[in-house]
Length: 578
Image (tube, rainbow, N blue to C red; front, side, top):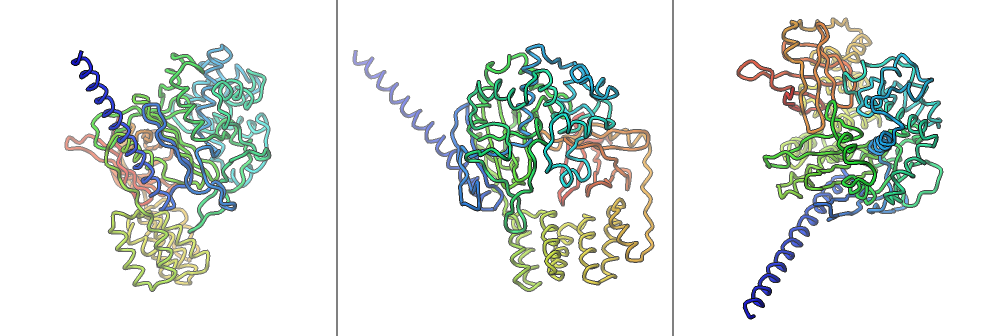
């Protein structure tokens, strides 16, 4: 009898110790997550709400900064944020529910459900193409002048559909991936057509109501919505209200609002068959091209120094004044939700660091932006002192050196009429990023405004030397009275171009697909249209539409094994995966 009591006491003590240790580890992770996010907040890199779940249980949820800066109303776990493209996963779920009910077919064509849609394209495009961004329909948010001319006006779905329905396709459906808000807008119209109900009503009846997502819905400007965050954008060292956007425009591609708490409920429901059968969910989470499934990016990621890769299912969103991210690791039922209302937060970096904490890996401390420090120094201190400080910050691993941010500071000063300070900043940027054509192009503009024609010509010529496709540099030199001889592109034989064809993975959900058409090479990054690559040598190419260059790297056997993307002062390698 004594033996049994002793065994029970020992077991109870062991259980108590295990529970105590588990709670201690969990509390330690909570403290680390909070300290990490506080660093991003202190760096003015995050203002929003965070939720983290481990093994299906919420271990952390908290708001940071202000939901409304004018009234000093803080963010909280129940603050409502505009989601942007996270909306697409809800639209995909509605489509899959209709597929299960027999009202839509994944192989069905657009014209099967919308007889008035242009047959030339509608007969080719399937529901599957729309869900996977492989339809070839041009992305309406990329149209020239879109945000200036259309984004503020209200539209009925059928009326707005006509703004892009007649346009020719960018490519044959199913052959390429190109992120298209137009495709998901069209899915919303299809949902309304086959249900004979507004998109928002179908969403409420089949997802929000059954899951009791009471803090999620279609965001409209006029209704009073308690605890709705205001969207802001950074301007210099402070914030301004984000430009107005009529929410009839993003529609089924980006018009929902939610909270981190409701998105946790959504995540948990995806582990059940409450909304969709297991077979249909398998279809929904199976990636097609460029790791994109139905409303989700699906790929693999490594955490810290761990050897094994974990499946990562996630999607981000960006809409005036907001950027968002929901990341799921189904193997361990981990969830990270990040909702930000100041635009442009480094949410992917935050997610990577939070994952490191969850898997007991060392955190990479967030780097402080140099730009705010430089702004203060260049306004108040002599040039020599600013240079001294800048070089010290540049050498310090605690600080982040960002070419585009420093360039923006130069233009900020130029706009204020502070030309000497502006030129000083552009010069520091040129010294930090000597291989970027854009830093010379920008300084050339400042020299022009300052009346230093000789220096302006020198900088514009340097920008063209680095990027022959810099059309602005060519135009400015002509304006300055210079005869411009555009350097001829290098000639690369077809066999060499063909050796570069393939897909190069730069991140778990970001790749560049290289294709060849005759003697031309094209690159298409995840979520972007294809752009031609122009050769400066057998291995180096440049883009004319953006400030970016590409270098192909061979191994000892002469096989092309990686691509390096040079953009915004960074060199981003991508391993060839196919």
